[in-house]
Image (cartoon, rainbow, N blue to C red; front, side):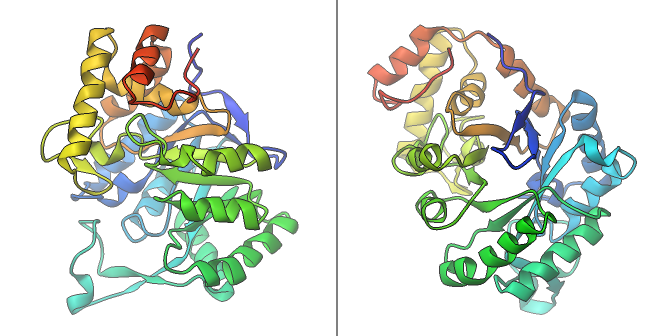
Length: 330
């Protein structure tokens, strides 16, 4: 049965819901290359017109630009008609000189992120995000990339969000990371509603299947899957492709090419299999599509409508490209 990309799915018992297809806003902030303002706004408008009602953003994305561009489209929409997640852990501050060098976002103002997982930093971050988003609330707040800041994240950021949740200011809280180990720790040591797992449960990389997803099932934690294309390699598996934000190791390229060969033999576009695969897991509630073109976003509803033969999934498992126990689309 085809998946409905615009079905509203509940985030446990929080009262928050998300569309199965979500919109990830990192590209709106000029990830890897500048993104002209008018094109960024037009892309958000296309997502809305398509039927997307869940939008994931963060102060990091374009150092505030993504939140502002999202706001430009959502400002005139009924507030109860969409769900927003944003993140805490970085404050955006003016920068100059060497501070402006490096980074993955381009075409931004002279501002850069400053790490801050303190209680005051979390509250200030939410206040500043609301100002950029031109909203009085967000439904979901995620602790963002606390890889080197575990203690402050669990001792200060989490309790601050937990208090806001208990007051009804926030509907759901969690964490968003590119690794699964610390996300698993959050699930086991805190009351987490939802996680954003970026790049660690995809058709190419199922690292999160070892401990994170079983823990989520056990605790009733829902999962947003980001980075479905593993930074681009699943969209175009060629030498020099990007994996996990860096040039892919040849072994990852070879695996992605093998996946493409098998999908092609079964008459299925690789991207379509990559989009459907994580959605089969019972912990996964939505995927956040990070795209730069309307046509790329349109691939997602098309992929969810694609009938994928059971023989394709069986061959991927037989070849050791997927775990034998991995849930796959019916």
